[in-house]
Amino acid sequence: MSRVLLKALQKVIASDEDEIGSGKYALTTDKSGKFWGNAGAGGIFYAKNTSRFLLPFRSERVNEPHTWGVWGGAIDKNELPEEAIHREISEETGYTDMYKILPLFVYTKGDFKYHNYLIIVDDEFKPKLDWETERYGWFHLGEFPHPLHFGLKALLPHLEQRMKGLQL
Image (cartoon, rainbow, N blue to C red):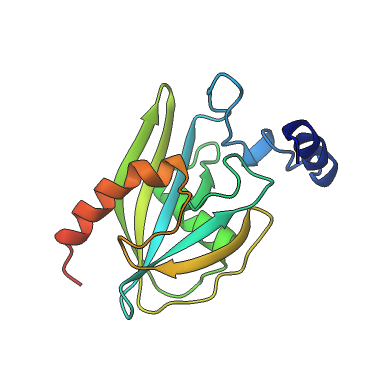
């Protein structure tokens, strides 16, 4: 499918509130690579019972479609990154049980910052999916599927380092 046709379909599918590249869901880039929005927060789930990580496969309706990434999105006005990750966990996965978060890495490009967290849960779970995510999978570190979103690629060395020193 051509990119022009894909963009046209995305605009037809999206409502005014969630149009790709605008509003509260705007963590995409324009043709120059500049981010729309200036901050985001997201995380990668780790299940203690299996030692696996939960990754979302990004839908056609988001930037960097059909790549494996992290769960997250824009930080709302007057919201701290730590508040945003808690909100994003609920919004993007529907997960409401107990968890622990640990900061991993802040991706920075120009004025844009994306705060990445490790989200530690006791057991694997089935996330609820929305328009941003086509599917999901639980994977062992070193066995992540491809293609990876550029943000997850940047996060991997920090995740590997954090997991070496983590006492669970």
